[in-house]
Amino acid sequence: MVFERVKDIIVSVLIFAVCILFYIHTKDLVPPADIFPKVVILVFSILGFFLLLKAVFMKRAYEEREEQDLEDEEKGSGKRKWISIVGIVVYIVLMPIVGFYVTSGIFLLLLSMFLIGKKPNVKGSVVPVVVSASVMCILYLTFSVFLRVPVPGGALF
Image (tube, rainbow, N blue to C red):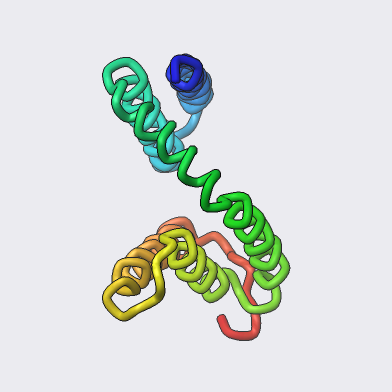
């Protein structure tokens, strides 16, 4: 438990160091081009700050994590890890064929439903569907509308 807390503190300090380094490098960017990098740096800084707060003040979270790790070992979470890795490989292979948005949406939906670990039913499928659709809308708006970055297209999109 203590090792996990120290590790999280070290990671949060490294996140702050990387954010400071990246922020220094974004000083040379002109105003329209500096928005996205600075937003990403801000988000990572906030997440690093939350990780530091958790590591310093939330001892109970590490105790619960330790209990969860013991339960996962009993349930065989190694199977989940390998299925996730195989899913990522299939995602990478299918993306140029099917298309980025379709493959990402399906992958995100299936992986989130799989990682929840409950039997699929209508009520339990609502949250993964809403989250997947929301993430795909945000990705579409970010890449295609805002940044106008070409993404791998395929037969479906």
